[in-house]
Image 1 (spheres, one colour):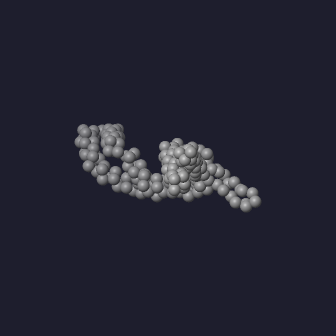
Image 2: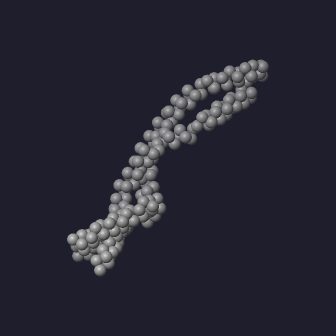
Image 3: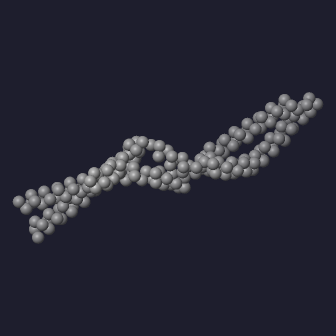
Length: 199
């Protein structure tokens, strides 16, 4: 009889632990919209819907400060290979302009002029590009607010859609918390049962 009591209380403890954590996770999202309890006139709403704006702001700040900046995005867009392609394009354009516009009397010097300009482009381009790049990055980073963009995007999500995204991303961890609640409840239930039945 005592063994059955221990098993029963252990199972109840596991069930309570599991259900408590399950309910706590559900209450992160639900109720999705404010729900007023009559008589006491108390409003309840899920933690994430209630603090959605604050959460969106924090995520935006983390994305901008810790994960990605405008400078990094633009740096990735302008790689060395693209610089080389740009240099070649400029040299080609100059060669074409010189060929078309150099007066006939100077056409004998065309290749010399093109070569001279090519050398200038080759040697000066890196310096020129880095200066322009620095100014460009500065201007763009002042105008583009990654944090604000992320914040607005999150706030535009339907609250159910936001719930689905969070559950999809953290599904394994949320299940782990529920299972852990069951395991802790089982251990606590077992200890209580042993103390009540045998002591």
